[in-house]
Length: 230
Image (cartoon, rainbow, N blue to C red; front, side, top):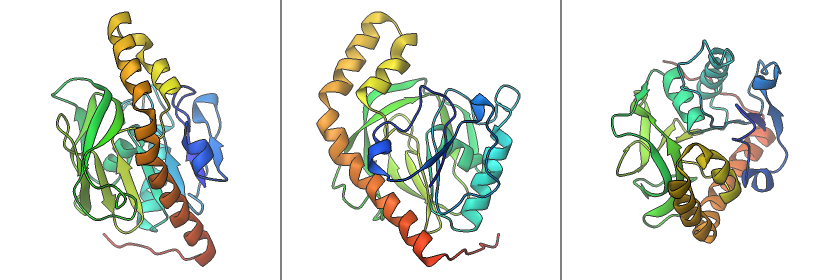
């Protein structure tokens, strides 16, 4: 599986132990992105805005890779920034969110039967850290999970491409790295809430990661590539 990491502070987290074999590309260290998505593609989060090509010059190539993966129905998962990049790449809209920073332990609500979400039976805990928002999803996207502050929390395009606004991969330790920019009191409270919810986070998101890994493995076995027409 091909993984695009945008910064050291937003790595694989839990997913490093849940996905199996991966190859990680780190363009922020000067590494060139692959020209092909491989058997599966995971694009992680980061502090960048999905349109900020001037400060993050690898974003156009990342969007192009995501577009190729979606068109070929290669198993693809975008997390936070990754989901926003997929949204732009496939014709949706991402802007600075009107409802401010969404940070800490939130809840998402599954809305539709889906291979990655069908194990969830109601509102579940999810780590959030974003202010940009996917305000218009691509035309052929299906909304599969929502939230209170920002409704577009998870979507699917075709059979094999998913985007999630929240962070199923983030461990409490990773989240603590992100909250250093907040006030000490706010950071301590948010960190404590996330740490206390760790068992629920693992129970909710390990099945998602393992289901995605299974889709990637099946794609590798079949060796099939489908070109979607738009």
